[in-house]
Image (cartoon, rainbow, N blue to C red; front, side):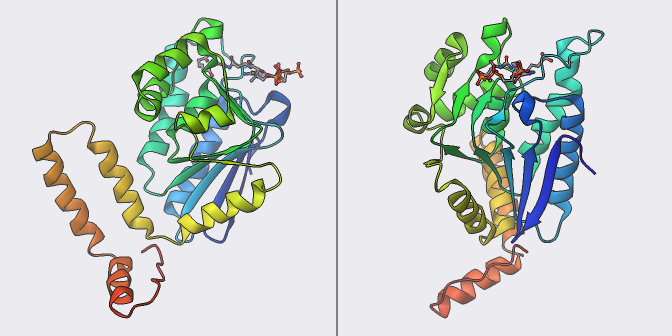
Length: 257
Ligand code: T3D
């Protein structure tokens, strides 16, 4: 069904793997379509409670396939028609999304990792804000997320120099949620994803929504929105289970509804 990604669901986790290893999983128009389809499918699924995006082979994603640029399109059009919709879909997805950064993550591949909610980083992975190395500006929401994650000064430095940030440095500056050794990679990524899948999915979606909203609203507007969010969370089965489990002094069994 897919040409440029693979997709499978196991134990509440949707595994979306970018699958163009010969090109270090560079983005093509087709890959954007397939990522968008897979996220849409995961969002509407009753069983998926977390999405993991990772890469096949030695890379996470090397950004735009530099051989797949249609010369009749300007770069703004490519961003508007391909990257923008992918990034917006990740941002608005009310299920948590983990970037399992298995190898190099460059250009828009870096932006993809930044747009996700968590970044699990292999000790052999690295990040490169490569845009400037070919005379472009960081795109696909890169500066928007990068400055929020590492701060203005570091975001500027990484973007102007376009140098490799190894995993250990990524952890130090807050880019990596966690750095994982190569030997423990599969086991620890799966354990992290399944841990998140066992949490109250609706509440996590609302946390994502309101954290993002907090950047754009006045406190007054925000508190109004937040009250609506809590009203919705208070109607979930997981809220009832959380409160019941607390009073019964046991661990809650959340079902994501
Ligand atoms: O449409 C638009 O342009 C607007 C949107 C822009 C968004 C962007 O993402 S712009 C930034 C695009 N990405 C880059 O500039 C990164 C290019 N790649 C690299 O700098 C390096 O490949 C890496 C640092 C990522 C990895 O280096 P290394 O030495 O480990 O691997 P390599 O030998 O350079 O690459 C291995 C193969 O993958 C090679 O193919 P070959 O020679 O074995 O047939 C290389 O050409 C291919 N490859 C790597 N990145 C891309 C790519 N092919 C197409 N597009 C790529 N982005």
